[in-house]
Length: 375
Ligand SMILES: NC(=O)c1ccc[n+]([C@@H]2O[C@H](COP(=O)([O-])OP(=O)(O)OC[C@H]3O[C@@H](n4cnc5c(N)ncnc54)[C@H](OP(=O)(O)O)[C@@H]3O)[C@@H](O)[C@H]2O)c1
Image (cartoon, rainbow, N blue to C red; front, side, top):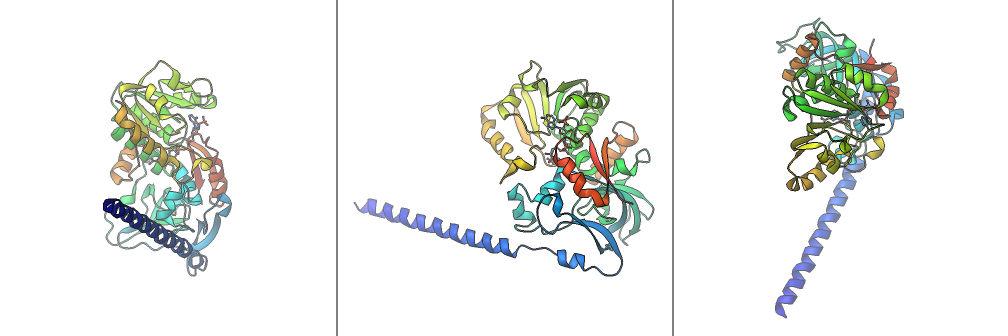
């Protein structure tokens, strides 16, 4: 009798405590949501030397993007000031623009984007360097990544760029950073590609896919690319030994097995992917999902499912997140200079047309990279 009363009390107080925690958490999120703001007003009131840049003061569709004059940045002691000649759009940009999946807003601004600048990939010419910069000098042609790349100038740390290989154009170099680094790290570090390895690349004709096919081929792997009919010739020309047209054939239902699947699309159930792998194969999740599939977790839901399934299967399933390093940008530059990797350019837009470029990318059928020319 006494014991049951003690248990009832414990349950009652636990319930009250959980309720209190939930109410406090809700209040904190509510306050944080309404306090969430950005420096859009200061940006638009820029005086002195200015430059054109693309900004978004609120989350939304590409319609919320505006090209405005903002203060031209000044490099600190460790930075380079780069005149941007070309930039490129990535799904990363629309994730930030829309603030989806919503879970990411915990880091980038609950109600409004903390940083209203957009774009990462760029290539250009160094205009000035800070006093502690040792690797670069004015006049050097570089490529790299920096938030706010949809602009006439960026200030970037020297570790954020590499010398542009003479063999490639600014447009090509400006398309490399996110997609090229992701493909390199997926193929080299996750797939651990080697000569003869059977590797399937789902989404072989997109930004990441066109780099991944070429990089895997340069490691000697036997690449199978998956794309639609109109991209078969492109994917084959990039070095795929086999191409599967997903409009006619489902690779997970075929007899062929692969040592590695690199998945840029995330359109097949995990158990189907497993069927297409050798018993000791690896499934590498790079991305997937369009603007309509985001919700709270978006592409993060898939690795969570994989974690639940992994104890019951022999194959390895893992997600990858690209880690931008100068060492890898230099490796990509060497591959490009050697002619082993050539960025594939689909469409070109002007800086004033970034919203159109992102709208096109959001359709999910870019062939290689979509580039922004910056005069
Ligand atoms: N984990 C990371 O660090 C990381 C880094 C970069 C990107 N990502 C993610 O990786 C994904 C791919 O990025 P991306 O830049 O390559 O995107 P993208 O350029 O927009 O990819 C478009 C390509 O996807 C292909 N595609 C669409 N549906 C397909 C299907 N059912 N089967 C096969 N291919 C299909 C299209 O080919 P068709 O026109 O022939 O349909 C098109 O060529 C995105 O989700 C992105 O967010 C992740």
